[in-house]
Length: 492
Image 1 (cartoon, rainbow, N blue to C red):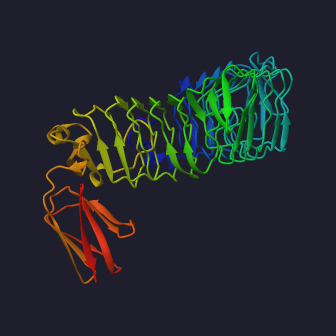
Image 2 (image 1 turned 45 degrees about the vertical axis):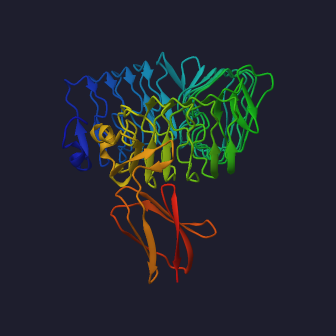
Image 3 (image 1 turned 60 degrees about the vertical axis):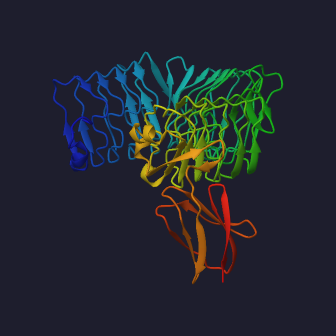
């Protein structure tokens, strides 16, 4: 139904649905998000329920799945916040991840004749109880011990279990699935046994109370973002005998320290070691107490979301060794200016939602072909290029004015990278009157900075006319800088 243009405008007016007996499939997103839907009759003709078919149907309190259904796809009943129980008939042979991810669900029952699944104490497992599929997020209790028969914790298995403060994983478990403990916000610690070999992507995403994690020597794979948005995480330790990973100062690296995998919640300044060539996806995501990060010249790749929402970062220097910058790599950072070196050959929506960004400097003599620095395939957009000045190499302004994406910048000015100045800066004058500094002799696009005599930046901007008038509230001597030229002005 997502392909029906008027669908969003009518979803809230749908209260009950009767599906015709000739229908065999409920398609992907079919009833998403019919928030007022309270009743639906699924006939015995239905064999499959599609991905997110009933996602966000917040008024559904119960639903009967007929004995004809064989597959229930990913997120099929996600965010059905009034659904408290569900019964799986014996016909079902496949259930996708997060199919029942609702914070109110307390009980999952499976027909005893089902050959693929079973339930025990309201928890969904595969038939031989080797995979824990779904622990109902609304189930009572603060602790849970996973049965010793389980070898795999499935994707999203404990997603949204906000009441659990303790989970015991037995030595039988070898893998922890993608987003397995997503938003288990009350977990403060979770011992990982020495049987675990893989921890998939975002396994502990948004475990906001998790303070410490210890990686045993058995683990040979940790997916990107496995511990992202764990805002309380301060300690990551790795068993010294682990052959794939190591930790240094509580930062997680691969064994030879060429990839920085995860930085815990640090504050102040951090310098990435010179051995690192890759900053992994989500490596510094949400580390909002970091105010400065030094990237060495050894780094060639910056992963997706690597510095996402590092709101304490106001500036970043990208070394000329970097060739690849991933999607949303610096998304939602507070940086005001950035220089992209000519070494970069591939860049995604790296600066999406950098709302304070005012100046971008690029060093390519030919504009790099990009699909969207700010509006890529991810949802984290929100920067208006027309508010940003683009500084380009001498003699390339016309090329950038004609290039896709680059032509959308509000101002494009040429910059002499050899002499470190804007091109064609003429002699200018500055004088003060009634608390106003008037700077004349400027050219459109000149970078203008004003400092107090003790070096404090008072104003920084781009000249939009030949004469600029800048209010200055305090009397004294000021340094007016245009490019690499400086003059003094006295405000009396």
